[in-house]
Image (cartoon, rainbow, N blue to C red; front, side, top):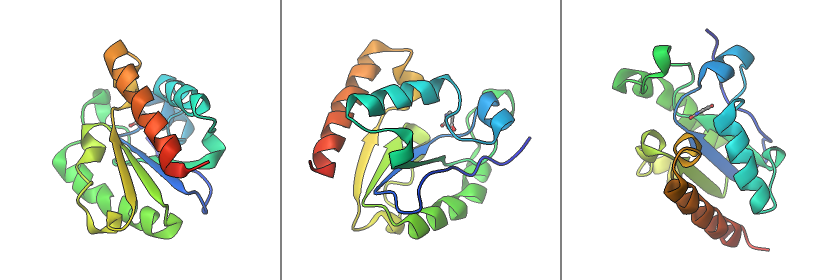
Length: 147
Ligand code: URA
């Protein structure tokens, strides 16, 4: 097992947060390297963005064994890293994907930033209604970005 800290430009205007690395991310050390990541890339492409435009990470920085939800103590242990990442990148817009990420929406590091809460791409790729919700949210994101 290895840490999957996240990746993207230091100057990214957009900061995406997922739940926890999966098996593929654990193998590669890179966030959203598996199927959910491909789905995310596709959603980004639909609004004219690519992975190189965004910073992307997850709340938990390690693969939870058996792909379970990260536990509360794991989330708490990883949270300071996420908060520091947001402070350093200082993005204009933070996109929280799924219920685990949504838990940080009231954190003070997000005060003064635009926050978009959407579904997790792993859910959106399984359920068409969720994919539609994600598409709609991403169109809103495009508007938030301007141009
Ligand atoms: N799901 C996440 O939340 N994060 C990843 O890095 C991959 C899948």
